[in-house]
Image 1 (cartoon, rainbow, N blue to C red):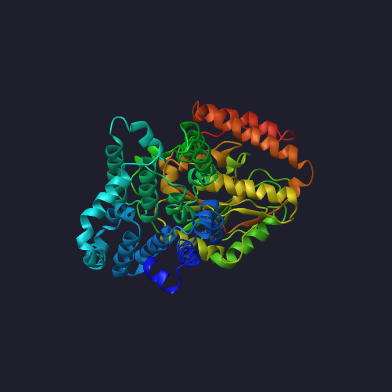
Image 2: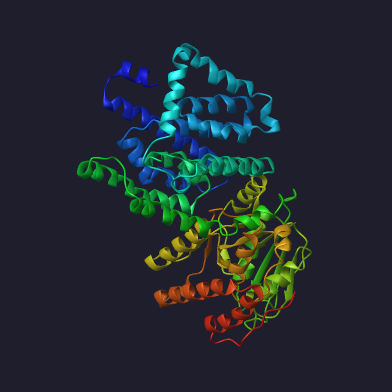
Length: 528
């Protein structure tokens, strides 16, 4: 490829065009993968606008973009065309040797029959260069045993010589997880991440190997590293001032420690989730639970809107907590729409509603919300293509747009995407088997949404759908800043209390309810 580029034009510009071609191809393929995974297309921005990508390809013309393009083509082909998988993976390896570590992740029963194509792609283009095979091997070995830009584990284990052993152990665990049902995208992200962390040399553009996968699985850790990696450019200063190319341990710590903290936050339930076997395959039957209290006409409007796309078959359970505004007096009950009564407190109401249905999926929505067009078909597609998700979150948009509500929307979305914690007005879809395994839905008056996310995150992924429902902004009419600070304080207080156990956090939720609703009588959690 590089020789062909010089034939066209022996200049620096042609190499930038070559790198940008791979970059743009990666972006286009990423759109296809996002659409296939029923993920928000705007997540492509995690790749397209990442500073590491912009500097690596548009500015410095590293040809790693060609490898990422071929890798994404292989991931896309793995869904439909079995033979093309090995062709594209072989091309990725020909461009960048690190692609070899991904081969075991593609060795599934469905793809194994055509693996001979990979062997051909790796061997045939190399035949004219067999005379230089020994020198090539020496060059790879020399490159892999030197360099001042070490990964964090390599830096710690270099004196003991255990860095290869650690990566080998990580690779084996990732392969086992893949063969037990881990999604191909996740396993590739973990494998390349483990390679970087253990590597003896990590140039800043190596992070670009992972960033297309980070767009498919938004990562707090790798997005943080994309920012802290700016410390890499201290190397040019040290070269000019001290005559060596690299940076010291202090800069390395500034680059990697935030990544480590973000990774611990993001994967706080990782080891608990390892104990969970894959979810059994279930149907797409869905029930809807609507907790209401003095909801006015909104609940009837919501039900009518839901029926437009769901039809009349899915069950809708409205759980009233003693409304006094007459909103449920003439409630239109039928075979699939029921009204039940419950003690007040949204967690208590939701738990009571869930107890009335045995559907494998339960959608929980607020009465003042309205879904976008196409929400039901999009959810069915997502359920069909992801078998490792314990909770789906649609997201929220306010019916009145201003700077304050826009900031709230952004913070709430980032909390789900990076922290796997959602609020109830973001509309949640719960997997019943995961909820039962986690101890059931938390029947508590407040923070039931946060508690449900924390429980289900231990069972499987909490995934953001990006088909936001419109909710009322009337409670944000004034004092937005003070209300946001109060919610931050309440959530942080609850999560710290959760470290002492579920029972302690449940009791605290009663006190938090009195803070959040000072004008209403106190409510206790219900023992379910």
